[in-house]
Length: 214
Ligand code: VGL
Ligand code: ZN
Image 1 (cartoon, rainbow, N blue to C red):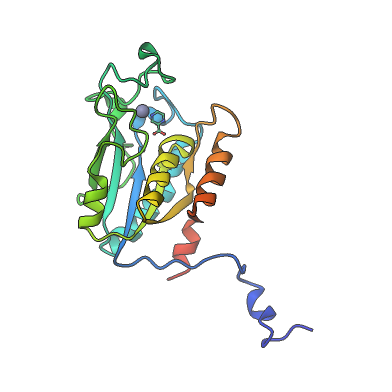
Image 2 (cartoon, rainbow, N blue to C red):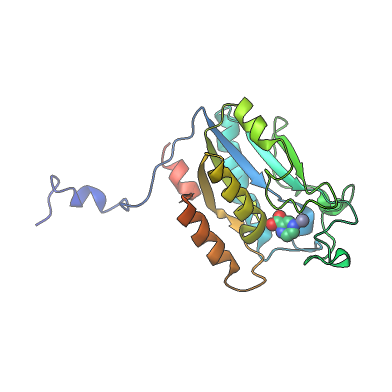
């Protein structure tokens, strides 16, 4: 028999496994590579990449409202970057420095206070991770960040590599499951990346988990 004391009644309307996340001092949002080349019409369009923008804008609004720091990474490659096919890499040229493709999506509502992190800026550095060859770690530490909330593109490349590094560096890492999309060069890549991040200790959340807090 279920009654209030057994908890079963109270739990009926709120799934047991849905966390309620309150963002507070020590938290930062990291928006990974939401750039025109990764969106429809871009040189390396991620399927459904544009769908991350609306949820990201809502996460951004929450962090800005709470005066919490926002970091935004951008792939920023020289024309002879090692990841381009002409240099033996896997990708068509994308996010080349000073081209439109490297610009952030126009409808991404970045605050003026956003901390921009440019990565992949030298020909020989792959730069999938927003920590790779950048000063992101130092800037997060300077801002006293302990927990990092990561969304953006692409799940199976830059988000994955960034989350791996964040966890290894000791940040409590949340992945915004409604604000990531995968390239899926192999159809299972996105799911495998999500499984790996979860295995490494990332916590997957979605907007409602933040919104339920208020
Ligand atoms: C990315 C492929 C090449 C990414 C960057 O942002 O996930 N993917 N460069
Ligand atoms: Zn790249």
